[in-house]
Image (cartoon, rainbow, N blue to C red; front, side, top):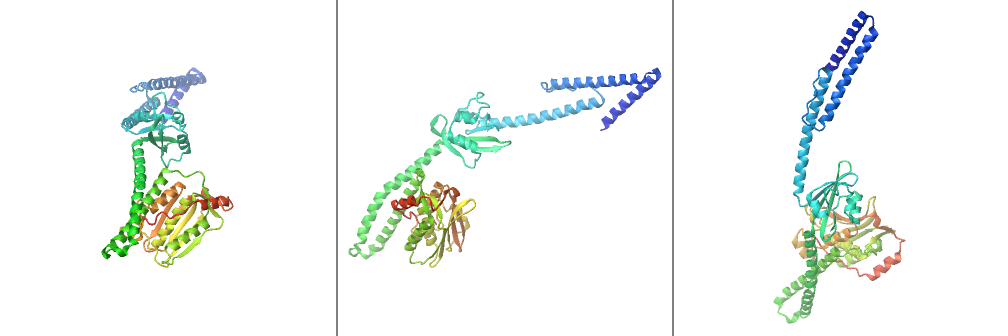
Length: 457
């Protein structure tokens, strides 16, 4: 502000001096005009110097500003200071970017930066190896043109990147890649790609191993069970000291048979996709069937069952699988609810989900156990599972069945007060009772329902 005042004072002094000279020579107006022209030409000259300096400075980082005084000198010096600060900031940022690029180049996973137009901006060396990108040929090319896969295009344009995408590497059917994308800046994307071929093979080997071992164990267990049943039918001919071991052997052979059956069920759920042809399930009828079966299994406990389900509610899905999932939850509730307890089985359409809930007033579950209940063979108390004959796979089966129906299992419980198991299915699986009741009935007649497992607790 002080410089501007000095410049204005200098201009006023120039005009005053010009007025005095003009008055002395008798041409005030002309002298003032000439003085203003001189002042204008001086400023125009300084502007030209300023422009030449800026043009020169764009390519010369150490270019000094033109020598001047007054307001123009302050402008030159101020711009020069700002340029030095900008150069230091740019150098610092360039150094950070350089280190980031060097470190990402050393990673085995591909790192790709994609601009808001969906074109490639930058990628590391691993991206060239995994995705076949070529530098600089592919720069500013659309990522969906370079990775021609319908699954990837759908994943990329969906902008829903909560889950990762697993697919074969472009041009290589023997390599499996995992894609994960994150949004940043102005709709720009950072894509990270990992080679999970080995993990995928190990997972496939695990599934095959479980399935094969379970299948191979089925025959010898059946033989053992058959001989034990024959021996138990003729216990009178055995010494009394063998009675208890024989009963224990039969009990454990039955438990082994249940475990093998559940493992085969899990293997089937993991390896086989849900069929396109699905059933329209009358939930009220399904609930009544599950209630009847469970009451028959636990008739000594005299539980009170409450069914809450509107007559018009139907569900689209695989009836045999959903029967297994819901009946597992109800059987669990019956096992851990004392005699004369209350079990509620309900279904309703919420705002965002279609909910099926199994609520009991049984022994309940401590909070720290809840996150792990759906793990295979996880037990709160091993003795409880042994006493009830559970395999520890029931809730794992429920979780897999629900996942095949785009659903989730929510567990709420208070120790000593009971538990709630809520299956949250998408609203798209809700159907009207008027939809093809004949199809649902035919499916019911053709399938044999079975409670696949008992306890996970």
